[in-house]
Length: 224
Image 1 (cartoon, rainbow, N blue to C red):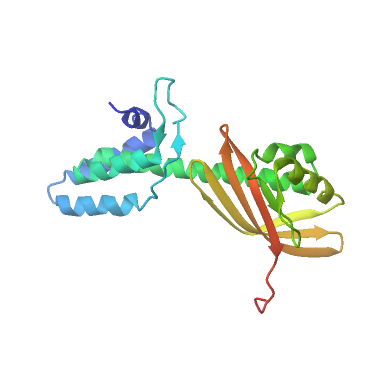
Image 2 (image 1 turned 90 degrees about the horizontal axis):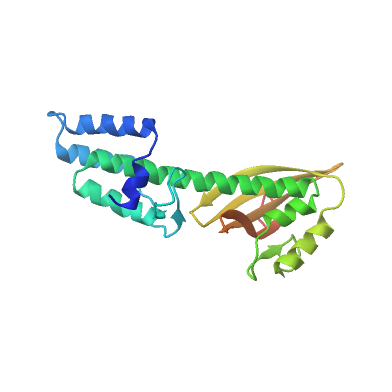
């Protein structure tokens, strides 16, 4: 049994019930193999070919890392072989991996703005990653490069009393990187402002870290 099969065998009872139901429908004499195959393809959807790695939460130390790329390849092979029960199981595993990454990046983004709003420099240090590629572009400011200089800029920015609310939040994530686009609505006493922001995250040593924040002016009604 392959590492992917071993990992997938421990899916939840819900996934097993779904697969069992699919298997029974495929073997029904009134349903052609052609119809069953295309029904499964529609349910499986088109997943991107990602090279990032993920270890199943229930895997033992003897299990090897399972990639989304390998799961997608096995899914396609199972559909071609008309092994619909295994294909449904693989489809559920691919979906779960993608959802897990999106949720993790969403939470990392929440922690970033919590540190920002509460002017918590220690929390801000914990959310930012390491590396020369770490960058920050505050509105109407030049690009700041390197972790230490970026954190120094936040020490200067995080002064005063204000609240931050996010609008139009969009999240995309693979197994090793992800980004969030949003509109920051900032309320500082009697003044309210909007900033368009992009936050890019990278998984470093198993934790999601911010490696780029860019804030820019909110477009006017005319788009200028």
